[in-house]
Amino acid sequence: MQRLGYDRYVAQGGDWGSPISSAMARQAAPGLLGVHINLPATTPPEVDAALTLSGPAPSSLTEQERMVFIALSTWRSTGGTAYNVITSGAAAGRWAMA
Image 1 (cartoon, one colour):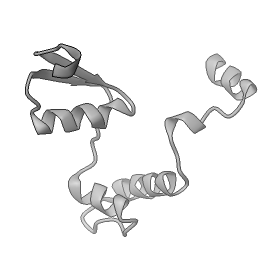
Image 2 (cartoon, rainbow, N blue to C red):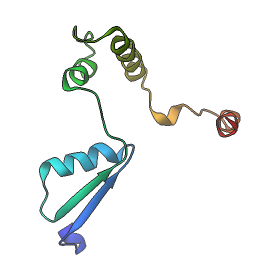
Image 3 (cartoon, rainbow, N blue to C red):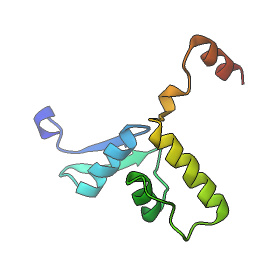
Image 4 (spheres, rainbow, N blue to C red):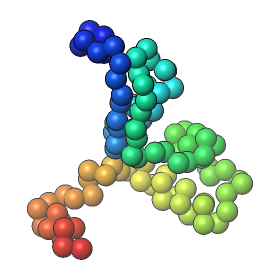
């Protein structure tokens, strides 16, 4: 940011910017006064590790948590993103009318 002429700055991230702003906060970059994220990752570390490695659900999960884990695992394995939900103009219209 100094090359851009900023000695002090803040970072904001939502969607794809959320992990970037979070990483900036962890690195405590010089001049970074704070971050604001509006898409926080809320999975426990052991769940995130299992999802990242395509492993089994942690044994400590409740039945409801296990169902969410399966859904997240399926979503990740099929390349799911928030952007592939709307695949056509008609789908966008249906979504907007909901």
